[in-house]
Length: 65
Picture (spheres, rainbow, N blue to C red):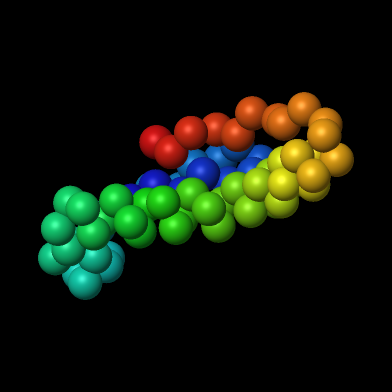
C-alpha cells in the first residue's frame, strides 16, 4: 500500500502489515484506495470546491495511483 504525502514523498507499507486489508477482494481494496486518496487530497478538494462555488477555475489534483 502506498501513501503520497503533500510534500511529494511516498510511503510504501507492505499489505502484510494489514492482514485484514490483505484478505479483502480487489473491489473492496479499491474502496480503501479511494478513501485514502480523498484523505490525502482533502485540502486540494476543498480548495477546488470553493473555486467551483466562486466560478473560478479548478486546480488539477493528482490521480489515484
